[in-house]
Amino acid sequence: MATHNLEHLRTFLTVYRVGSLTEAAKMLGISQPTASTHVHSLEQNLGFRLFERSPSGVTPTPKAEGLAKDVGQHIDALDDLAYISALSGANESVHLGGPAEFLTAMLLPHAQKLTEAVGARLRIRFGLAEGLLDELRAGDLDMVVSAVQPRVQGVTGTPLYDEEFVLVAAPSWRSSLSADAPDEAELAAIPVVAYSENLPIVRRYWRTVFERRPDNLRTSWIVPDLRGVRAAILAGAGMSVLPRYLVEEDFASGTLVALHAPEWAPLNTVYLATRTGDLDRNHQLRSLASAIHRLAGS
Image (cartoon, rainbow, N blue to C red; front, top):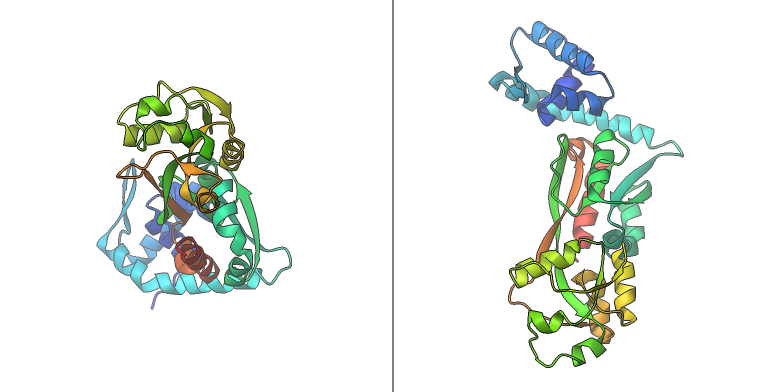
């Protein structure tokens, strides 16, 4: 019976899962020529081709499909053992990235449960989706909560949470409106507290609800943090569009009110992203992902 180099099998499995020699090499921390050599040597040893090459990447052959099925669980089990062994060191941590507002409101209140789920120290990094997903692919992060669907090669995202957006303000602004269901013209009289100059969240709400751009709105504040936007509108600075999870308690206490109740509220799907294959071979990340899904849905 032929024997095969374990590293060659690991490289093959990574290439099979991400569909690219270049991306597999980055994930494994080796050069692209080395990854290509591993696959070629395995093909020579096996006596058949594993991938069809093309400018856009590689496509597994039927024999590669069978080999991946045969060796995948065993390679993953070995990687699991190596990961568990590494975590016995005092400095090992799991790195989770995501939007500051979502992580602060939805996950950090359950910090103890997350720690118990992962069995290691958690390190949190706030940031925008694009940069965090690049860090995930590079190996600087282990998991990312992303406000956009991941479209980075070598990264897999699963839907985590549908955030509902609501148009909110302090009660004094609601009492200044003459109609129970104010139209766009009435709302345009209220100043806007925005996340950024181009009003990304407000613009999305206006296009979904009113089917037009919010060109008639007057911006009074730009606050690049949704928690800061909330603080400003609590102080009466104007109106804004915020995710419902961030203002649910304010609605309950009456310190903020919804200015508009559309038939269909704008939604945005939040994703939980990991490097492709990591959840299959890493029980700690699987446990953490399960806990995050459970807590986000509670």
